[in-house]
Image 1: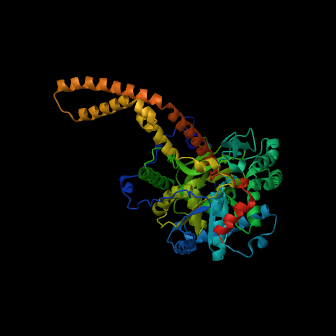
Image 2: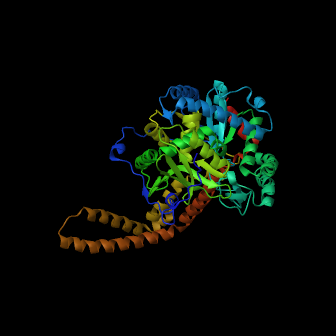
Image 3: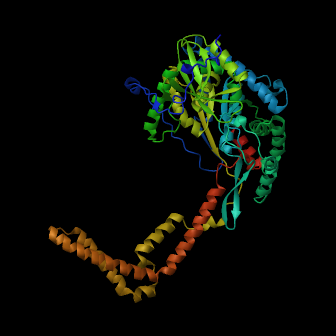
Length: 589
């Protein structure tokens, strides 16, 4: 067996001028034939549910279990071989190992035995999977967990939440509504300071004083709105879990899980970081590395079509292209070392019977494998890279759902954002694996914090009408004069109307070039006089204009306040337990 780190010759390690990822400019392009693929995008028209306590479900929840059964049957009988093993075999293998890995991790969170936790459930039943970062997300995200549980209970299956800890942690704070005099604005309360950007699985607390005080700070602030936030009850347990594990992601996940457990939701939990260390995932990864050129061609072809369909000009949305730099080809995985916090893109270079791996700086390993061979030896190498050398080999967004939908789930539960980018995943499944893509469920919800909307908003004139009145007053101030003012300024008003009529007649005239030049001078003089008359009349209506402007300012201020109060993205931790529990229970009974 080859030592993946022994290859240190210049020809096998990217040098100063040929480091993949540093100077990459050329993307892998598809051929003209592949561009003319007959498979078209199935565009999904999805909108965030607008009303309070509303739910978006595509397909409907009543249809979801049927889709899961159909997906399971289709994948069970699919004629697909991946590195000399059938998809059916790989799915059974993945579901068995990931089920037990999730049971183990969930038991760590719950502090209790798995049999009690799962009440006899096994990986043989239908599997419903959701996932999100281990953040203090909003109810529209949390609803996926409750749906997965409800569907598992309905079908006597099992449900799994993937903790997406390979994503970067972007914020260590929560936003709250705050009163500033008569104005309602956003306020942020941090739970950490002085931290560096890193993946969630590497996140540690830097400012312990801020972290310890966070729950009380949020509680004090929300009490001003007469709300007892769940976060106040959660935070002592979060602090304790963080002290025990040293991992912020585990601490936040444990608090959310304990709350779900108390409400009767019995999903299993599994971090992406642990999923990526299992043999079935590494088999999938080895297959994509071995088939890198074909996969990247299809990936970039699909990405280009997606951008054309949605008229996207950004080179990073929804994902960047996979790049080719010399002999090195970018693949859709992250890599970094245990001692680092910066994710690096992974690159491969194919040789005679081997695949070299790079993190963009140096060769990190070599897989002895061919495209049509069993991947067991390559999987062993990938395992050693993680276990013995401390490398993090992690999936990226599209490959996360690609693996989960094909190898694990019978029905994957997406939010709106994930559902949109998985239109690409559907196409990759069709073109790379030559399979009909399994259906997925798209769910989102809107639940507002129980805050009082200012009474003034209900009695205010509509802002658009006010703006129209202000515009009309600007051009037609004579309409807003009092009866006495109209009598006093009757001559001026009559002159304005005569000037308008003359302008209308002038527009209809036709003549020679010399005549038009003469009329142009007349038009200019008439326009100047019209503006002078309008301004003179407007000065008489200044009081009415000032009144409208004051109402508009008040209306604008309260409209901005309403948007703050009716923000659907406030953290679940800010809600009173009864409010959010009733909504979830009513929705998924």
